[in-house]
Image 1 (tube, one colour):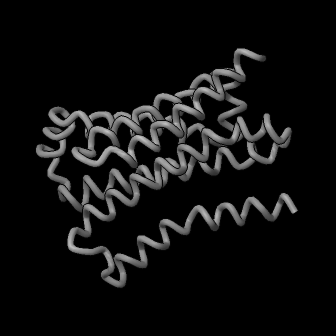
Image 2: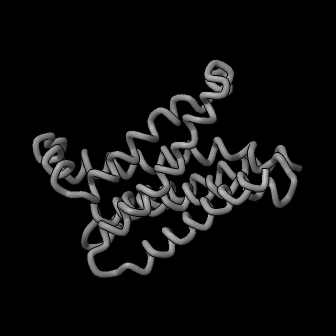
Length: 190
């Protein structure tokens, strides 16, 4: 049963991507298509960050290693949706106008912190294989603790982006802080 759950979770993780492709193909993005794609992929990045952070507490609560077995896959989906989010901004919105992009990264704090979060995801994605776990040994765990910083950066990115409506970013921030506090609590009890 458990071996069938992993492919099911992989398929479910592709549903948001399929949905945005459907909206693009059938012109269902509304009056601001680039903004819709950017917000959609950004929000799904935060959803997958929350899911990834929830795996260790779920393992401890249920005493099942299943959650750890899917954590890497969920983490790679964080990278996938974050990369789609960043590419939408760089390629579609700014059409690779590097001068304007660099100007935005330097001057707008929400873009700076979002870009920083994406850069921190790169080493996690590139070292996610079992071979890299073996090569890096204990350093692998230390490196992958960057997800905590990435989660905080992601929630700040959303808060700073939202100029008037703070409810959604606040919910994500509270969920992330709760999940991080569970990890701190477990560390102290161990």
